[in-house]
Amino acid sequence: MQLSSSQRLANLSPGDVSAVIQMAWEDRTTFETIYERVGLSEPEVIRLMRAELNPSSFRLWRMRMKGRTTKHRALRSPDMKFDDNAIADHRRANC
Image (cartoon, rainbow, N blue to C red):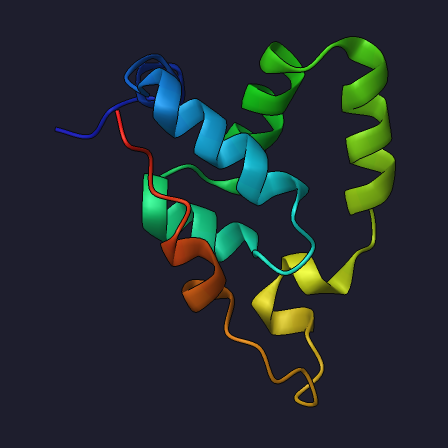
């Protein structure tokens, strides 16, 4: 049985929520990596950010993410030499 989007969000620990917010703000961590680490799709990350950030911070984040090619692996240039999986490895929650 698969969990619904709202169930996945509700099942996150405070540490996981913090890790998702931090990864979402990072330019080099893709939404695909967030999905692999925590199981949240891009729309779920957006929903979580809307719920957790104050409105002005959410608007700032959305403006920053809009059209940013580094947030999607498929849109990245092959010249980008960093591995977002390695960057996100240290972002696992402790609680």
